[in-house]
Length: 165
Image: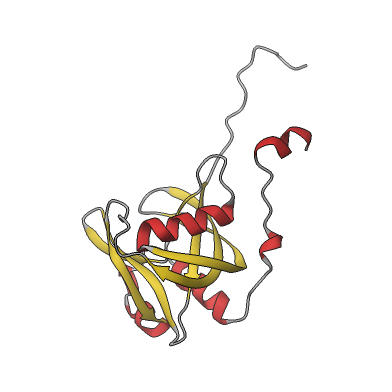
């Protein structure tokens, strides 16, 4: 028998994030140097999905906010799940790949961002513990290994469309 007055069970919600893998013609990847808890860390342009935002839009937005680069997405690389023992949080990260279109050095960067860096895969690996998470190399290696899905593999039904879903 269901008690209509009983509290609803809590639903566990991981942090949904996006990341952009952007490589140049010289094999370097666009990275973000940032201050996290007083330590310098390196990550791809990445961040949290905002309410009513498509995953692809979030990846483009985060890249601009953290690097000053406008990008065009070409592929969906995959979803990676990770538990951050440092923050005690579960992360579900959607990784996309694209190309840099133009740099806007005048664009203000998010708080804590030191600036963009273009680094080769071996330079990124050499950063070791300074990487924000193991997802950085995991997603780069997936892309380098040929893991490229069409952007249509990720769809968003937002706004008016969801009323009929």
